Image (cartoon, rainbow, N blue to C red; front, side):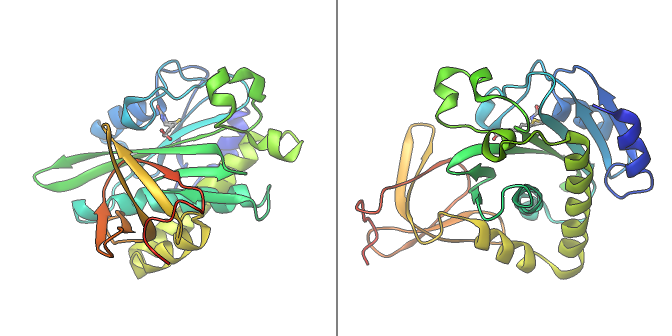
Amino acid sequence: MNEDLLRKNLAGKLIGHNLYYYPSIGSTNEEAYRLGAAGAAEGTVVIADRQTKGKGRMQRIWHSPAGGNIYTSFILRPSLETGRTPQLTLLAGVAAAEVLDKHCEGKVELKWPNDILIGGKKVCGILSEMKMTGGKVEFVVIGIGINVNINVRQFSPELRFLATSLREETGRAIAREDLLISLYENIAKWYKKLLQEGFAPVKEKWLSLAAMIGRDVQITLHNETVTGRACGIDDTGSLLLVDAGGGTISITAGDTTILKENKNVAGN
Ligand code: BTN
């Protein structure tokens, strides 16, 4: 990773003006959280070439080998009500999906809550963590992992069916620095839009990129499953499902599976 190139291009930018680069670290999210708690400014970014304790959602491990992927976390200090902070995760998904789509046009999809898929396989994951003080949001850390140049043979056998990388999909190696610079710039663009215009534009873009809307899905959380037809998201970032009885259910967390067309649960 060319740290100098990153510093030169990110100087003075909303996201990236303050940059910490590590050849190896436990987790960029943990480091950004530590920096945030110590008072680091909004837009501070942490980048690592490798993570030894990369964190995924639901206490999972995020496989983080050196040399080919993006592992980054950044700090935001928005004045948003706590209930609206999931909007930032969806915003990061929209911004990252737009950047990935430039390399793999028309093939990038969002999967609620925060996965980015190409050809149905995961290429990017997002993990947000928040610190609250006195009932208010002090800061939010948004962590983004993108499989850029990794060869799928480096994935464990069970991951090989579920995950992919940009190089795998395009046949070309992509400079991680360029991708990071475009990513931070696009996040800054969407963040300003959210603060000025509210959630509506982010939501509209998110829905246009979400393959699951209008499809029957199954959501699993701690051994419980809920099935229904995905019909939208609300302003707290929850997924809205129409169940077999025609009622609307709002889901705040879980893993999503898109069901095959013939498993029709919500009627026609
Ligand atoms: C998921 O899909 O489960 C979320 C994965 C998030 C991974 C990224 S990599 C950079 C940042 N640091 C971490 O420890 N996790 C996030």
